[in-house]
Image 1 (spheres, rainbow, N blue to C red):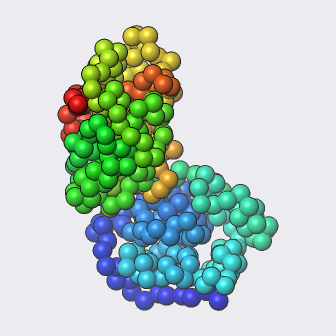
Image 2: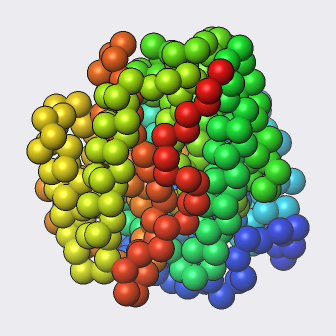
Image 3: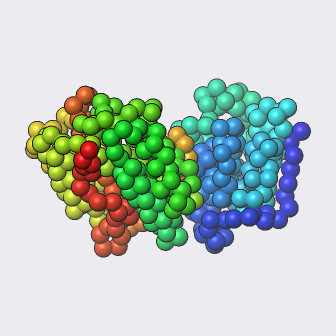
Amino acid sequence: MAKRSRAAAQPFDLPFPMPEYRARLKRVQAEIAKRGLDTAIVHTPENSYYLTGYRTIGFYSYMALFVPAAGNPTHLSRLIEKTVLEGSSWVPDVVCYPDTVHYLDATVALMKERGWDRGRIGIDKSAWYLTIDDFEKLQARLPRVTWVDTSLMIETMRLVKSPAEQAFSRKAGIAASAGMRSALAALRPGTDEDALMAAAYAGLFGRHSEYPGLPPLINAGVRHTMAHGMAEGNPVRVGDAVYFEVGASIKRYHAATLRIGFVGRPPKLFYDLHDLCRRSLDAGLKWMRPGVAAEKVDHAARKVIADAGYGGKFRHKAGYSIGIALPPDWSEARTMMLRGGEKRKLVPGMVYHLLPAVFEYKQYGMGISETVLITDTGHEILTDVDQRLCVVRP
């Protein structure tokens, strides 16, 4: 039997004042009404956090936020989550199921009790934490429901950060920079990837970062050419390049930065490629202002690298939106990227991680990045680490 709680919510620490949460809920409910929905079910934990303040490491278990067209939302979660719900969410309507009850049984029971077992119900088909199997079973058990896809509905609203959100992004930029400087300062021959990871975490946590959506990406030697490789304790030797990409989280708002280190005397190619990526970054930054289509940033950054003959080595978008995140990612790339074909325009309050980079296995992995806030008149760089290739002489 699901446990219910509707006493007045008394959260320990709401990241934002209640008027901000009310404004967010109002926007979502206006969109729900516009789409002719009775209720929308939110399965993406970042969206639940955005609307309620609820944050937990327990997002790996089934949870849902029911947002009706009017009135307060309802949380559905495991019973073990009851105290973190009470301590982090402003929403008083909480329904918890014990581990002896299957979560779909609890979902169906709640929907029938509230009259949500009929009509038009929004559901995010792109949510990582709603499986195909679970959705098909809900469809079978609730045959009177007309399911309407609400993928990226709330994520799109999250693209433009409020002044209060921007303040957390700035703090995340400070923490990410501290983590990067700490890791670079620890670079020396004879160390290893794990020691560099420890230094990065010391810098991050020293500036009050929480655990980021991704751990730092720190890879030495041949592994520095392996994009999205992770530290495995490999040693750092003279002649090794090291890839550093460090992100920070403040109240789940992220910022990240990328730098390259080298122990010994770098070959001329490394200096040339680093300068190329820095010029690509500068070219992209010149287009980061309100009213500019996102693809123009990508085109400008990509042209610099393509003109130098390395276009085929720039294998990803030029950047992506960054903000609220939980593992396994720190980006909002699913919502908006700085990439070719993205015609949407930059708007004040958007935050992006701009990261031109080139990779070729066993030869080089070179890049540089900044986290950038779009302002009313242009942009503000939130990260602050020396942009030079970090060379350590033995």
